[in-house]
Length: 348
Image (cartoon, rainbow, N blue to C red):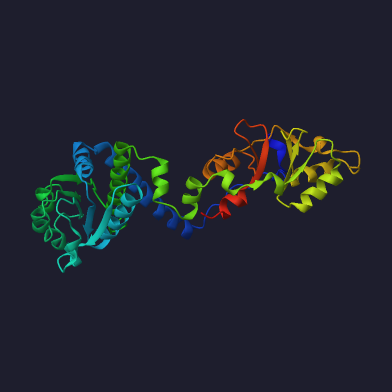
């Protein structure tokens, strides 16, 4: 569809030069910038230092037929919870076990052979180390994520992923900022590596996200959500604008499909097309749908996923709010879908 198929916003006046922040605000902004730059540099260093230990940890998880148990306390525990959630959503069954609760009965979640990922910045957290003998008794391999591979935890683990943190990013260099971020990133990297090795696809992801917009975009198709041909405004190319407006008023979907006598899509008329036509000429009595329509508009197919349809509408300089839907050959019109239908749709 041409870039002018929808009304454009009025041209904006030249941007004013940015106003320098006040000294107090400049200090705040600079504090935040220092943290972000420090953490960015640390992420780059982590990527460079990723080694065979990361591959060994991934192999241990791939060989596992049960679930992965992640454990930690404090900030490390919170990060471990997120890693467990990421694993679950990407096809690796996982559960978080708080290290302090584990020794008070919660170790029952372990099944012999379940691999454990123990997260501890120092590698010397007492609550985490207390779990090691029992986990080994279960015959479960241990993966340690720590800043010190030579720590007590690192020495007892079957695989160690060392986080190269020279200093935390906060002003005191004490708060788990960079270390927490890098640990989280390692969890994402492990999940991604497992996805690649297992051939995890979008359809697999959809099975674990049946609700929410992600699930709808992956599981539902345009054909399941669209307004079918009998419930949309549809006129011929020679239809007077009065007839076109009446049809669009009866079916207020923001557009009308213009069809030739065989039902093939000839064009699309949107509310914006009508407004532009009215702005260009005061007398519309002689105009027809064919005069104001957009020829060869962008179109969707019934079997297209909602996610792909949304991308067709949004991943362009001039975003679209409605698409005609045609048969797989892209010729015969079968319906209409709006961006609102995509974001308001529900699963069956």
